[in-house]
Length: 109
Image (cartoon, rainbow, N blue to C red; front, side, top):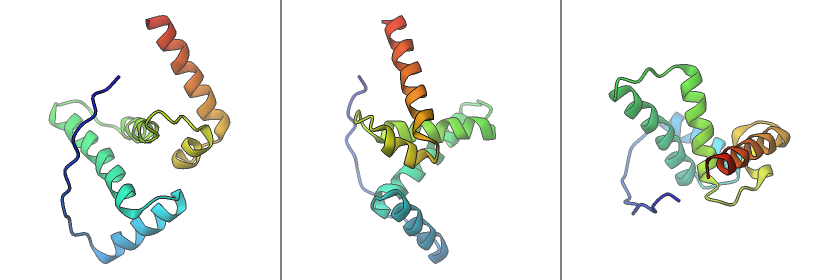
């Protein structure tokens, strides 16, 4: 299990249009803008860290980072409907992914 990290707040300024977009996207996902903005930061930060380590970051890699971030966002809840809504994919897809993950973990354990 991953260690729980201490969270520290920061303040950022974004263009008005970006704020409106973040508000809309958060509303569509049923969460607060600040929570959604944190998720967007996590996605971008993961990509920048990968690039900093000279790891190639393609669109496919970024898509995987986004998916992983949303899955981790659930923090163990594993509610397939909520995950599917956050990822914008069918719930059946999420169920297959989670079952594959469970099979992988059983084989690795």
